[in-house]
Length: 136
Image 1: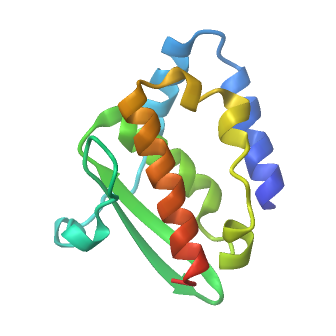
Image 2: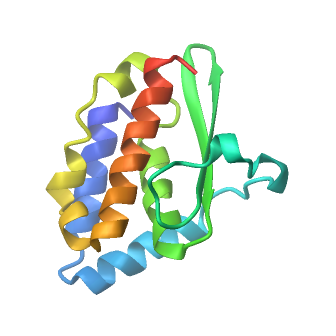
């Protein structure tokens, strides 16, 4: 699935729910579906700065593509990082660095988060882009 197709799928998935309470439930389910994140990778250098809760992001460059794994100590935040890595994991650094992450605005996520969670979302996006720009 291309990056554009994946983003469109996320937009369609979110459009299935009318209420934000249901969309939060969907995010929680995404977070629960995350692959287990090894405790030994929960290190300071993997912590995303600017998040109220703790979010760890790890990346691996294989065959020219970035693969992400992540975890958070907060259930909604875990869902948000799961959503992001679900879209961007397995993409080339160039694809990720060149993307505008506009689907986030389209689903209304940032507008429906508390200010501190919205800041955390921005920090997650910036970190993923920075990893891509550095090619690792």
